[in-house]
Image (cartoon, rainbow, N blue to C red; front, side, top):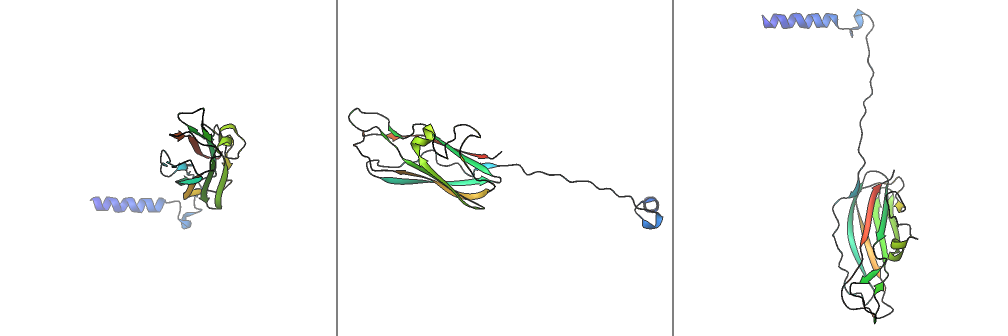
Length: 181
């Protein structure tokens, strides 16, 4: 009984189908399909929270590896809290601050995005990387993207021109990756 009802239903549906050309013109329906890929831009993994650079008594360099993931054009901007490396316990007898160079580099689908400047310019402006607030300053990738790309932040400091205060020295760099609007 169920098989007969199903067969009758199938025949009834087939006979009433508007898409059969032999029964007249076919109906058609056109519709758009819309989707979206969300923008993402940031560090693939968090960089180390600090970079131990060693003895400041002679010229040196230190590198912080970065992993970047931006599926849209992006901007890199930076600031420096002190504008230089500063002695944590200053002395009136010796040098208490040391400017240094910051170099940012990351690969993109259009080549390498690179920019460099002095830490002092990251505190007070005057450098392409300087960008104290969202959407301000910084270096743009244009239309280039950086999906799972590697990069580096390189810190270079000169040999001091004076005797430096012994002890701990520090600065805080803030690096922001943001999708370009």
